[in-house]
Image (cartoon, rainbow, N blue to C red; front, top):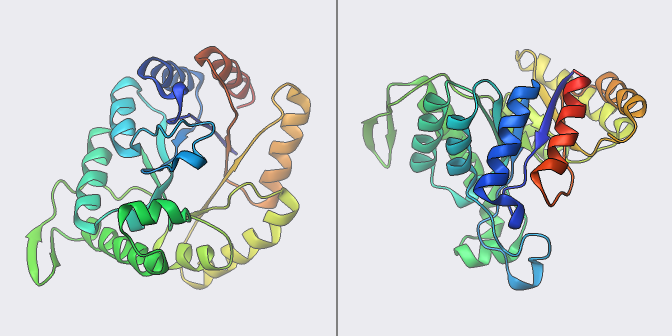
Length: 267
């Protein structure tokens, strides 16, 4: 079981000092991965906990790539309808190359109506818009020359494609994960709920000729009780998870660093 940590790239905890200290600590503790989220336009009536402040995930991970050595860098998740295919491909490829191929590209279709409205994007088209970006990413990382709008062009840099891990609820997210992805991110599922879904997902990937899909679970672990935490990890592993990503609220870097060190001792 791989263990990761969710680092807040929102609110006052997203200062340069705090995100840097937490990322470096996670890298040095031997955790498998760190993950950050995405929002672009938070309305005033939904800003509790973040104050409407969100750092862009790709720029933040680019910064953290330069501050860390080995830890994988994950988006949990990048909201695809917000992003045009070619520009997104260029940003992801650049980050993948400069990070020495450490990106875990978690992606989703989005849900916040007010955010779609602020961006002038049709919420009802979010599935087709997302799949258009996914189709381009798969084509671009496989081909030196690609085409958009009847115009061929060179896609470069072109490092190894990062794992594309599809976030969202079954069954639709699983269908997209089988079609486009290398894994699935179910959000906050209990082990007993996860297990049959994970079995179904793996059966579909086998039928599609795909091997070793990732199942990344975002959750909160009871780190104040290491014995119970070990039991929870084992239960999730038996249910089919390959990575557990711990998330919690914190005000200071030291609070998350304590959790990171506890997780490091469980590896």
